[in-house]
Amino acid sequence: MADTAYPRVVSERETREWIPGCPVQIKKLRIEEPSPGSGLTLTVTAVPCGKFGPVSFTADLTYQNARRETVGKAEGLSFVTGESAPAEIPFPDTVYARAVIRSARTKTGTEWNNPDGSEGIMPPAQKVLWQTDPLYETIRRECEGTVEARYEPDGIDGAWRCACGQINLEDSDACGGCGCSCSWLKDHFDRDYLEKKRTEYAARAEREPEAVKKFRVPGDRDRLRAGLILGAVLAVIALSVLTVKVFVPSARYSHAVKLAEAGEYERAEAVFSSLGDFRDAPDRLRAAVYDHARAITGLDEVNMTTNAASPWFSIDENGVLSFRKDLYEKSKNGWNNFTVPDMVDGIMVRELDRNFFINCKEMTVVTLSDCLEVIGEQAFYNCETLHTVNFGKSLREIGPRAFINCYALETLEIPDSVEKLGLRAFNNCTGLRRIVLGKGITRVGDYTFALCTSLKSVTFCSPLTGVGTGAFAGCTSLEKLFCRFSEEEWIEPDLPDDEENMYFLAAERAFDQ
Image (cartoon, rainbow, N blue to C red; front, side, top):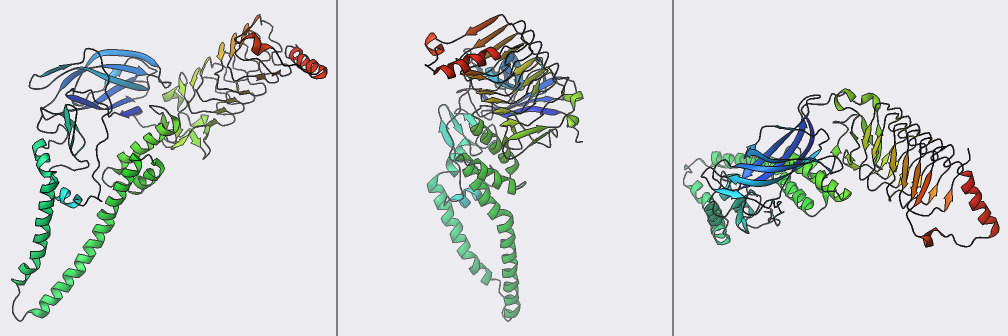
C-alpha cells in the first residue's frame, strides 16, 4: 500500500487576481498538513509589482471547507514577498483559503492601503508570443539572457506587464518578477527595431560564406571539400537533433498553450503530457487540468485527487467512483469529515459505486461532491455513527438501501435536485427525527423510511403522486406532516373510481405497521 507523502497538500490555488495600484500580487495559496495529526498550515507566495525590493504586507484570510463555506477568518496577518513561512490554521475543516491584501509597504517606505477591503480583479488577457510571429526568432535572439519572452509587453490601468507576464506598477522601471527593465522592453519589442535587427541578422548570414573564402589555402581544395562535406553532415545531424529536441517540442508547446487558452483542454492536456519536462510543460499540464475541471464542474475551485495520491479511490470512464476501505489510511486522514472529491484522475465524479462506504462504522461526517449525481445501492449501509451528510447541488438519485441502519442521523434535508429515493433508502434510521423532502420528490418508494422509530415530522415540498407500500411503516413517533405548497397543487385531478381507490389504498399502506 502506498504511503501518503507528508507534508500532505490539501489544496494549492494559483491566483491571477490583482488589486489595482497594489505593490504586491499574491501568486499562490497552499494549505498542507506537515505531519500526521499536526494540524494545517498556510503558505503564501507573493511577488512585488516592481523592482523595489521585498514588500511587507498584511492580508485578511478567509478559510473555507470542501463545500466552499466559510469556516473561519483571520485579519491583518503579516507577510513578506516571496514564499512565506507556514502559518498555522486554527480551523481543522479548512480545505481552501482566499486572501485580500489590506496594506503594503515597500523597502523605500512607500505605503499602500486598502481600507474598503476591495478584492483583486482578473486583468485582461495578455497577448502570447507565438512562433508564427514573423519576428519570433528575432525576439528570442534579442531577449536571450535577459528575459524568457512569453508575452508581448503591454500596459494596463496604472501598471505595465513584462514579457514574463508579471504585473508592475507604472512608476517602477524594472520587473519584480524577472528584473527586466521596462525601457529595455520598450526599445527591444519595437516592431521597427525588430525589423531592422532581422535585416542585419540576414545580411550577416549572407556575408559569412565570403568570410570563409578568405581562409582557403591554395592547393588544398580536396581537404576543403572534405571538410565542407563533413561540416554539412554534422550540420544535418545537429539540425535533426535540434528539430527533434527543440523546434518540434517548441511548436507543440506553443500549440498546446493556444489550445488551453481557447478552452480545448483535453487536447492541450494530451500535448503537455507528451512533452514531459520540456520547459514548464508539467506546470502547464496541471493548470490545464484544473481549468478543465472548473469548466466541467462549473465550480470556482475544484477538489481533485489521483489514484496515486489517494489509492483508496478508483474511477471508471463513466465517472463511477469506488472506495477501498482497507487501503484508506484512517489513522492519518480520519473519518470526522470525509470529503468525496469532484474529480479523480481527471474524470468528474458522477456516481458512488455500490457498497461505497458499507460498514464504515467510524464515519461521522461526509461531504459529497457538487458533481455527484447518483448515490449507489447500499453506499452508506451500516454507517452507524454517521450523523451529518452534506449533499451536493447536482444529486438526483439516492439508490436502494443507501442509508439503512444509519442510527446516528437525526435530521435529513433532501435537496430539490433529488428526484428518486430507492427501495428502503433510509430504512431503520432509528435516530432520525425530522425529514424535509425537496421539490423533486413526488413519490416515496416502498419502505423508504420504515422503522424510523424516532421520526416526529415530515415536510413535503411538492404534492405526492404516489406512496409505496410501508413507506413510513413502524414510524411510531410520527406526529406532524407539513406541506410547503399551495392548495391548488395539492388537489389531485379527477380519477376514475378504481384509480382513485387505488391511490388512497396506497396511502393507507404507507403507514401499515
